[in-house]
Image (cartoon, rainbow, N blue to C red):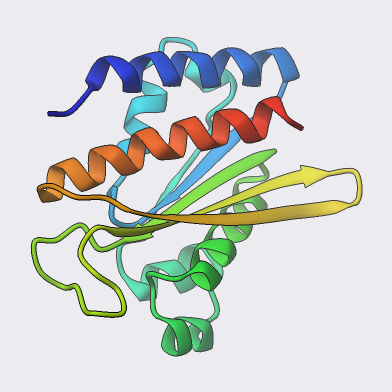
Length: 168
């Protein structure tokens, strides 16, 4: 079951913290197809902290829109720590935002492998700091239908970015 109320609650909290810090956020999404951006912009007043996002479903889009290196995509694949870190940093720079979240995964039902199973999702986070851009990455393996994997990815993204914003 998809918890839309939790998504809304998290979006409101992310917005409140961004407004308090006078900061902005951008998104670079692959397997979630813009769902994180949708949830963020469902909140009235979100234009104060969300100006643009990127749906980079294909490798070509990741490279062209937010500068993910083609060699990184070839070497590690789109669903990797290396790619989501470049996605987050590229989105942050391109959107001139303070915080960025990126997501790339295998939502299923097919497309998985032993090394990268269905449900594997990588998340990248980037933020401006006084010394430059700081990036981190996390991954999860979710179970359930394609929609459940995508929904859990949205919730995990919002929870994680909320922690990153609060702690910086």
